[in-house]
Picture 1 (tube, rainbow, N blue to C red):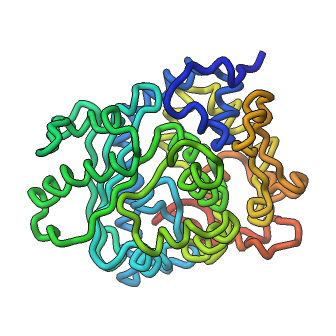
Picture 2: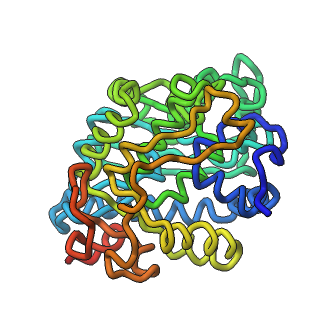
Length: 383
């Protein structure tokens, strides 16, 4: 018997769950205790997964800039946010446009169910749009005990003490700028932006396999208050980079088309997952791996960009939606979803990542002939 929304305990971001269709799907099949167990266990995976992902991003970008690789068919994950994918030949130009010439970008992920307790902090630095450095701290790191000089709060206490995400991020930057200036004084004059992220939002993003769906869901989380009537952002920037803020103020369709143009030239990337993450899911959470991740790919398929743009989300301003638990995302034609058999691929090949010459203007059925490359980063195989 599926778990219902009403079965969820009360916590700060319960109302945001319907913005994550894969989060809701996972919960309805496996329940709250399963999600909590996975969330707690994920602490052990944070560093090795991000080390693998971000080190590969930096190495791939460097190889493309140096002319050792041709990046127009190579995808790697962005250093910020590290759940989004980007074509390697577009990395430098797009990131410089969005964030400027020299910037620190810090990603604070908070536990929804522990009143905002910080899961981890990830910091990345970019110069001229090129990712050059990163560091990460987890829940037990002494950095989280650093206190705000005026408020006296420890860094790890901020989300529980300051309920407004924007204000919380402002106070966090005041602590972390000092940390940045101590660690890397040569970057002390660089811009600094923070991203405050609820763990539920990040968990949903990690299950999204379409690059277009991933960027569209970023809009949902950022605009959760303005567009969906929720109390605050599901995730947000502090302060807002000017171009990024302008783009997020567009419509959902406008944002998604524009950002996907910047990041992948509008091409659809069926997002890959690293071996270390796949092995962890298969070994410790096989129900999620088989009944959510694999089942979605094998039975439901992946929406092409045109379907992503035309999808209608639940009207969360209508409170009867919560009462009826009508949280379905309505795509105009699910029969157009891309299936493994259309691409003549098996699951193991698909899950390593596939770049397609499929855009929002594609109207023909997607087939194997649309495949440009397989994989992530320097291990990409070209067709």
